[in-house]
Length: 246
Image (cartoon, rainbow, N blue to C red; front, side, top):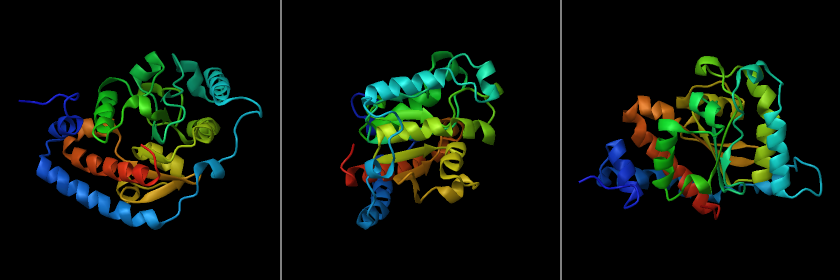
């Protein structure tokens, strides 16, 4: 009998991965070892690393709403002409975990929300498997408008949105950042490298620990890699715990 996500989110995700409990426990133990070793490395608090991004005197909610209005009216690149809605981000504005994806797709463009559809449902399962919900994290993309035919965003489009992303990071001040997929990882780390090179290492984005993993859409196309995605999520979970978040 298949379990439900509500009964046991870890088991439910493992069923979608095709991974049994014994294998999962071995993966978890292997993932925890390097994470534990890295706890001795001091990580500067994000709040001390990131400058305030909005006018003095504005509370965080007002800052966030003001930035969202700026994004909604942005015409800094050609993508503005073809969008239905901008995709600002969703979730907890004071989240310990910030997830950054690549670009909005068709459903995101229509709804104005990141990670909807099948990829969004898989992301929800991945989060549930480490004890989190979408409401407990913040999810954004490296650009706020959908590229035509879901192509990869161009460097100039990423550059046009970067100050919005930096402002969101400054306001949220997460303890950990998860970078979902090659496009988001290369953009935020300012490196041109394959995902195989960027994974398995902790990086920094504006002084905040950042870990690279697969985009959920890729895992839907390559389900044999879901166990590796599980391993990455355990690294993120361990780092969050070490930082007192979760």
